[in-house]
Length: 287
Image (cartoon, rainbow, N blue to C red; front, top):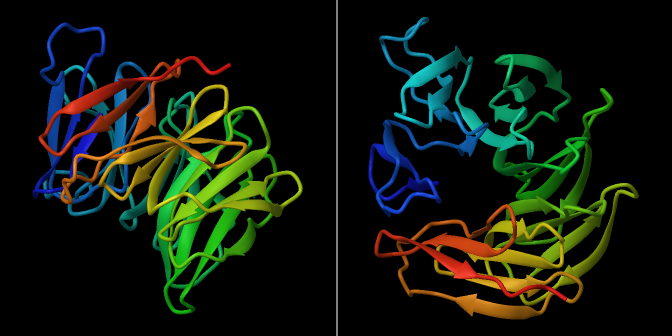
């Protein structure tokens, strides 16, 4: 799945990997830039939608569930304010949205808001939201606009406690990803650093120094490898234990804004290239 951010309206496209054709299975245009989109199942794709006069009530921001077959709207929910951040659990059953006035947990299958999440007030810019693999934790990396500092928020979804938050010593934060097998997460930003946090102990463990403008982070299933999207200009594969770069690639297209992600089985990395195609890179078996 890709999001074309170079033109308005913005276009979502997705492919069937088992298909012989490289033509997208479907493409949908949205009038506003989405905060994100995810496949909730083989049948549904969820994304923020623009306000339109035909919706009920009219001219309200919406959360949309689209058919992966033809892009038709299967479900929609009006929202009080636009979605600023969106993250989904690995199985697609839970969703966290951040809006101007708060953060919320959703049950996607029931298509309803489960509860409000404790949220700290202030002028915040949400960069990314992520779930742990067991769906117990959700995390958001944000910029405090008025205070000019970066912060990690971490919710334990089994409680109603306020989120744990810790300042992040990076000029900007862009991305967060949970380790698939260990209680760890990684925060990436606009410097040459990425920070590893122990989720259970609520403390920073270490800082890597071979990262560059990590606009997105994604682990392979075993957690040995971490792929970093380098602000739309390429990607790099890191050894998670050391942070060392094992492989990097760029097509030198400054306008390209894709995230690089591992396939579910970890055998491939997908990355949308500057020529409008999506490339698949094979990943060697990890010892």
